[in-house]
Image (cartoon, rainbow, N blue to C red; front, side):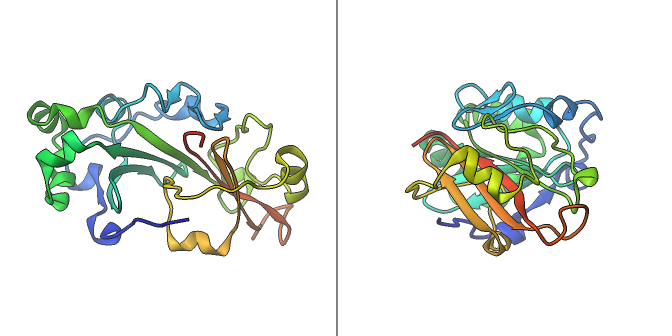
Length: 221
């Protein structure tokens, strides 16, 4: 899988500390802790065909913003404490206005109302990928839901293989919260729009066993 994350480390900013926005209300993300993660579609009511950047930032303030630059340009919104990440892709009408000002883009998004008033096309950037990550053990993991194949985080590798079958030929993926750290996982990707990342659990009852550590979804291929 490609990893189009040029400039990510230096361009990540936290909205709460850098831009003065209030943290997300405690209950804003709560419904998504147990929502179904549906391959090719979304997480609960956060769907690829309807969720866009401007209303998402308004409804879920307090996330850490990062610019993701590759063949396309995206904005990633990460909630580290919850292990949730959302990737929005900026279309040509937005990037032609913003140009190469990626660093300034993140700063401007901290003043979202003014930014979207000046660049309305950027507000309609669609949701492209969602990822959920495990904590060190189930009790320390925010996402307790399951995929539409009935697989949770910490699912054993045998359960993954039984429920999803053999991985497919999936190329050119652009996933939320993708980084070189994912290289430690064994990746199982399926064209219906889901990737499972499997590695050894480091704590808890599944310690040293191969389990699902991270799940990302994307539009079906």
